[in-house]
Image 1 (cartoon, helix red, strand yellow):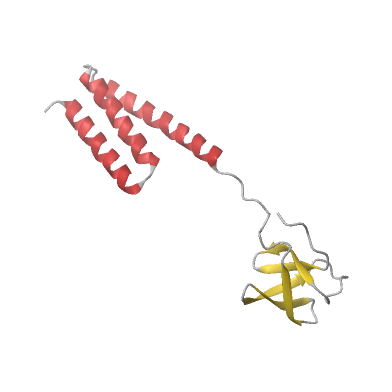
Image 2 (cartoon, one colour; image 1 turned 90 degrees about the vertical axis):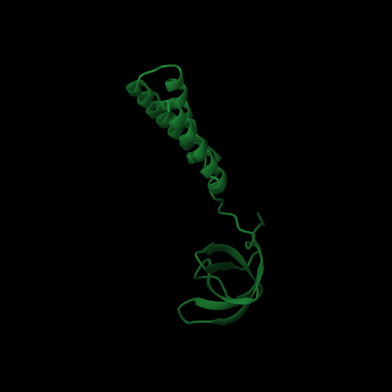
Length: 141
C-alpha cells in the first residue's frame, strides 16, 4: 500500500476518536495526518511529509491554544448570594458566628469588627465558604 493510505487511515481514526471524546486536539491531529497524506499523494518525499505534518501540528496547537484562552472569561466576583438575608444562630467571642442560609448552617464574620452583629444581616461577600455579613443590604449583581 502507498504511504498516503496510512496517513489517511490514521487521520480517519483520530477524527473518529475526536467524535467520541469531543476534544479539538484530536481533530487537529487528524487534520495534521491528512496534510501529511496530501503531501504523500502529491509525491513529496518522507522527510517533507513529516516536516509538513510537524509544522501543521505546531501551528494547530498554537491556534487552538489562542482560541481557547480567548473564549475563557475570567470568573466574576459577583455571586447570587450577595445581598441575601441570613438568620443568625449564634455568635462566638472571637467575632465569628453561625448563620442559617439556604437550608444549612454557615460560618460567618462581620465585614468590620466594629459593626454590631444584631438586627437583619445581609451577605456582603464570600471568602471560601465563610459568609461576610453587613448591616446594610449591598446591591445585588
